[in-house]
Image 1 (tube, rainbow, N blue to C red):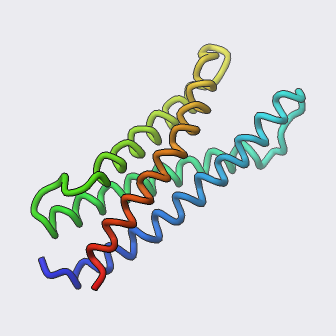
Image 2: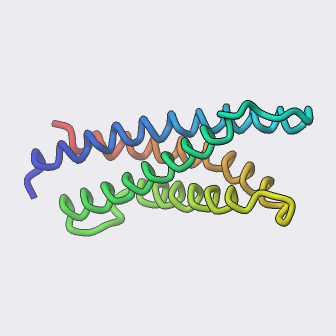
Length: 145
C-alpha cells in the first residue's frame, strides 16, 4: 500500500499510545492512593475505585487498539510481521495488560495473591511500556519522510 494512506493510522496510534501512557500513570496514582487508604484502614473516597476501574478498562481498550493498528499497519506496509523488536515489546505489553486486568477482577478475600500479582504485573508493565515506546519511536522514524 502507499505510505501516505497510512498516516492517519499512525496518528491514531500516536494518540492511543499517549492516552494509554496517561491511563497507566492515572492507574498508578489511584492504585497507590487505594493502597494507602487500605493500609490506614480508611475507606477510600467513593469516586476512587470507579475511577481506577474506568482508567484500567480504558487502558486495556487502548492497548488492544494499538495491537490492531500495529498488525494492520505492518501487514499493509510490509506484507508480514516481525520486522523489528517492537513486535515483541508490543506483545509483551498486551500480555501484561491482560494479566493485570484479569488479576484485578480476582482481587478479594478468596484470592489473596491476586492483589500482589496485579501490583507486580503493573511494575513490570512500566518497563514494557518504556521498551515499547523506545522501539515504537524507532519504527515511527522509518515511516517519516
